[in-house]
Amino acid sequence: MYKIQRKLFSQNFLHSRKLVSQLIGKSSIGKNDLVIEIGPGKGILTEQLIEHAGHIFGVEIDAQWCTYLHEKFRDVQNFTLYQADMLSWQLPAYPYKVFANIPFSIEGKIIRKLIDDVHPPQDCYLVVMKELAYRLCGQGGENMFLLMHKPWFDFSIIYHFRPTDFEPVPNVDAVLFRFTLKKIPLLPIAEKDRYMRFITDGFGNGEAVYKNLTRKYGREKIEKAFQMVSLHRKVRPNSLMLKDWIILYTMFTQ
Image (cartoon, rainbow, N blue to C red; front, side, top):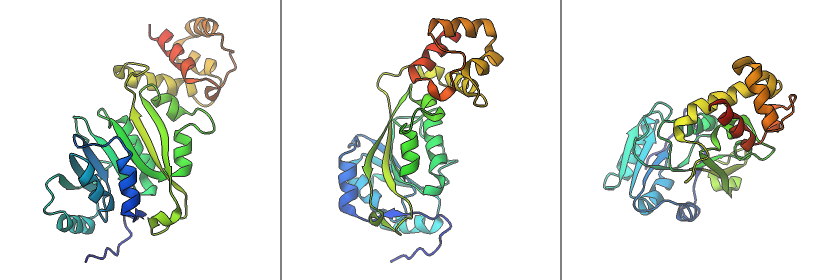
């Protein structure tokens, strides 16, 4: 039996096979799906994904865990292991899903990589800190991240874990966070980069949206747009709903 002593790639692992099986069983993952698992570690998730999915790509940065996983799953035909840093690993250009128990220390970077890639996952389930998931799901109001990504993605919290579900026990609360591609996007995917730049311009340095956009697009165009959607000149970025941003963007790009 391997004993992994190092804490270089510190991770809190789910240990209940029953719980993991229930969560994967309730997901959208099926026998026709390619699933990427980030940081398989002990392989508890991997065992269940092998049973539910068509093929699994495991991406593990730690050499000792890779040795352990190669030995554990050496006879499994639908599991491919890559020793690599997920943050620099190239995502597939064909459809895939993600199910992973990722390190809390880099959860934000992993989400950014997945969601902003040219080829994002069709469906993604990540174990993350509750505080982060609440922000990403808009609890407490719309934020820049949500406004940038909601035209193409839906966000939700699937499950609230107990600290004792993990080994070692974390000092934070964790949830299973999900984001999935909309079947009918609110904007064409080809508009994504341009729309995200528009949101960035609108937020500016936190001043009124009117003032921020005037700097970039000119007063005449902004004045006309604000009048058409009945927006006050002093409205702040976080006060606008997604529909307002999309209307403004559409008017400026016509």
